[in-house]
Length: 254
Image (cartoon, rainbow, N blue to C red; front, top):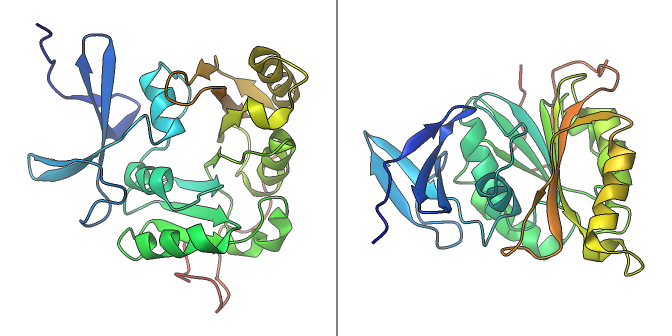
């Protein structure tokens, strides 16, 4: 019979808890929002703090962390740009990790999932939705201050180029985090998943100090979590931002 270990705080992200069951890792994030659950995930309370189950089958970021990702992840107080936020499943957990003093600028281009993302953001204050196409970062650059990290889940053939275009414009500068949920099936059938990963890492490595990639099987077949720390130039734009009247959850940030 497998004995469960106690919950342990993650040393790199204080709002993340881990618990081991044999060779399986269970993840929980400290909730930055209110019930009901976003996608049916479990909730628990420990020492007056509420945590949400971070399901690897529903989140590529969770699958990567549970699978041994040793690179940067969101931390309290940080600002993150999220590309391809969809309905907000993983984006809400990123909002949990940065907490009330942080912000997640969540970009989604499709109206139907954006409506659900918008509804979730009403209960998750750090989550700031932006209806826009991640291929055109200049179209929302005035809404996003220089960010400490970028997470991308955009299943497109040119997903690496989309990520780099956003990183160059919106990351705060050297040392900022960059994570990509790389979907190799979207990159063409002419190469194996491993060859597509190698090609993506070769392009990223020109501007990013990469950590070891993690394969997301069996939860997300043909996916890898890749990324590391940005080496590009510091972002010269001012830190303040005022959202336009038509953008959800407009507010000024220091």
